[in-house]
Structures are given as C-alpha cells and as structure tokens.
Amino acid sequence: MSRITNSNPPKRGEKLTSTELNQVFTEANAAFPMDGDNVRNEGVDHPAFSLSGSTGQSGIILHKADDDTDTGSVIVPANEEPVDPFDPAITVHTWSTGVVLFNQDQVIRVYWQFENTVAGSVASPFFAGGNVLAWAVWLEWQLSSGGAFVPVPNQSDFEDIQVSPDRYGAATNETYGCTLLNHGYVYDSGSPLPNVDFPPARTGYGCWWYKADQNYIIYGLRLRCRGLIQNFYNSSPVNGSPINAWELLESPASTHQVTIGASNMAYMIMEEI
Amino acid sequence: MSISFPKTWTSEKLNAEDVRDNLDAMKQKQQQLSASDMQLASKWIDTEHIMQGRYTSTTNITENVSGTFGGRNNGAFINRTSYCSRWLSEGTNGNTRRLRIPYAAITFDILRPCTIFFQWHMIHQSKASLSLGETVIFTSLNSPTIAGVSVEHKIKEQPASGLDVLIDGTQITNGFILRDIGSQIKGYNIGLVNTSTAGVCQNISWSVSLEMFYM
Image (tube, rainbow over all chains, first blue to last red; front, side):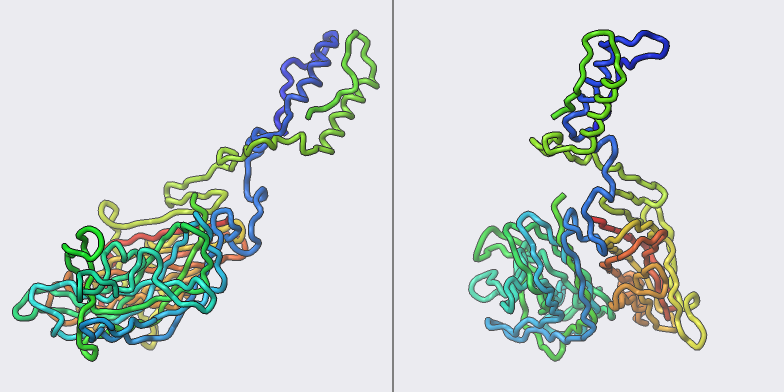
C-alpha cells in the first residue's frame, strides 16, 4: 500500500499526548486510496503480468507469431505474352496459417527468405544500356477460409495497367510487400547487347509491415513470383501523378527462368507501442 | 475508504484497550480491502511504474520487463573484417565444420518463456580461387550445430571471369529466425555460423539484431 509517513511519532522519555497519538493513526489513513504510488513503490515486474507459460505471445506486446518452411523447389519461367492475358504468376510458397486474428490498429510484420537461382542468356529482353531486368516475389494473404489469395495492401500482382492501352505492371508505391531479384549484372552497356554476368545461387529476403485499418482474419499467406520486369518512369499513368513503375515484359520462357528453392516465412502480430 | 478507528483520544488518559482496538482496526482493514479502497476512477498504471530497463553498453543490449532487445554491427568506423574459408572449416575426409563468425552473435539471458526474432545482413566478397567453392551461412541456436531454418544462405565463390571482385564476387545475405523458447536459459547465444568450401570469403560488413519478447 502507499507509504504511511509518521511525521511526529511519540518519542521515548516524553509525555504521550492525545494529539500525537491521534496523529499516528490518522496518518495511516493517508495511504488511502490505493493508487499508482503503491505500484511505483514496489515496481512492476514479470510476476505482475499475465504472461504465457510457453512463449512470449501473451498479447500485451506480441499477440501471435509463427513461421513456416517449404523445402520444395519451383521453376518460374518468364512471361511470354506481350498483352493481357499474361502467363500467370507462379506460387512458390503457400502457408495455411490457421485462423489468425489481426485486429484494427494492430501491426503485422511478415518476413520471408528463400533460395533462388536465375538462368538466362544475353538475349532479348536485354538491350544495350539496359540494366534493370528483375524478378518479383511478393506476398499475398487469404482473408476467408478457402477463399482466394490476394496481394497484401500496397502490393500489386504486376498486372495493373500502367499506361493505356498495353503497358502492364506495378507502380513502385504498390510494391511494399515485394522482393526484387536482379536477373543479371550488366557490367558493360555494350552494343547491340550489353555484357552481363548472371548471379549465382543466392538467397532473397523481404518483409512487409502493416497497421490494420480494420479487423482482419488471416487464413493463409503465400509468396508469388513472376518476371521479367523492368523499371521505367511513367509520365502518363492511367491513374494518379507521374511515378516510377515496373513493367511486365515479354521474354522467351525457355531462356529466362528463376528457380525458387527452400523458403521460410514468419509473421508477428503486435500492439502498436 | 479509510480505516474507521474506534478510538480518538480527547483526554490524556491512555488505555491499552483503546490502542489495541485501533491496531486491530488497521489489521482488519489490511486483511479485507474492498473495491472502495482502490483508486478505480481512472487508470493509474503507467510506464513509470514498471521496473526500469537495463542497458549494457558493451553488448548494446537492453533488458526490460517486456523483453530483451539489441544488436551488433560491423563496418565503417568499427571494422573487424572476418573470413570464412575452407582452410578454416574443412574437417576430415572433406567434410566441413560449422564455425562461428566472429562478432556476429548475441549472448543474453532468457528469464522466462519468450519468443525471439533474430535478423541479420552481411556483405561478402569471395574472390575466385581454384576451388570454386561456396560459403553457407546459418543461424545458430545456442550451439554451432543447431541451425535455425533450412534455408541455406549461400555465397558462391566468384566465377573465373577475370572481372573485378566488385562485379561478380560480392554478395549480400539477409536472413532471420523466429522461435519460441519455453524455459529459462541463462547465457543463451544466437548468431551466425558458416561452412565453407571457398578459398576465401571475406565478410566486409554486417549487422545482427535481436528482439526477444516476454509479453
């Protein structure tokens, strides 16, 4: 309880007065009501909290966290279609998370890492002076049991019209939940084709953070991949102001591929502190 | 509500019985607090009431009631270049051993069940040699031989292209691990280990970070 301060306790060897005696008992009542002083004097530590017995997911800061590994391997060939409909994106990791409550104003952090190896040759769509060919690996979520996966907020599937009528891709402000893998290191612009070194086997990494604007229930997460894409400055977008963007290209699928190997995903749902 | 003392003295006569009754009234209140004895009109728990965190500057780790958080980095003004190489990690019969990467681990106390999230990035240069090998980075969970996840973070040795190592011999690895720890473990260590069949893989700069949640 709050501290009882005896400001004038009866003293040895002196005559005890009723005033002093009453004051001692009255001061005991100064400790009421119990409030923050009681706690501050003791300090709040682990025993004062209702914590989980096996994890750190008690819901005070961290609500829920989990991870999933897929040891399989998937080949993603390049898109060969010049116009819509394009070759579909390839799923490289599907994770049935179970029911995950993600309520308004909570924050979700999703991370992923994956092995990958590109295969290609110095041929179209490489061009002299170009240095921007890439593969996109992005995050999608499933918000109903057995329902469709859709890209997470602020992320595109790279199939949005950028410039009417036939340039599709994604504006860069729609690539928040995305990892971009460069297809080749262009070390000389060259002519008619550049000199290119293709990356060796490596790992990719990405993350996506989001503060819930409403209550969500997540049933699954997955990673999708497609390419090749290249960036450009979109001075006349179909919507909004001019912006940097990525364009889905037409490429020979037998020549340009990326193999996604073992992958691991993790999420954390947290209170915004 | 406060204590109802049965006796308030108005004269100089002091009886033991009166004193005892007042002391009994205090005991009874202490043993039977009610809602009206508590401040319920408004919230009064705030961060100031929580045990203060402790920061250890040598390890750059803060230990709080909520968890332990910290990180290490290497590069720029604090540059401790380290190496992975088959000359270090090769064991008998061509097998490779997992070796720790110096300055890329965090040791901390786990005081109760928790959830840990560890991340790192590292920039490597692996120049071409006769071996054309590779270096593989793993996270280690309190043991060099216990890897966190099965994703292998590979740094292939530079191909024999004749190009500068900056062009095709420089790689970046990024990784993470999420784990629940169900018990108290003092001196828990999480960090990076490697196996290597490369002639040399020079680790240029890196950072590791730890988030450990109790609640």
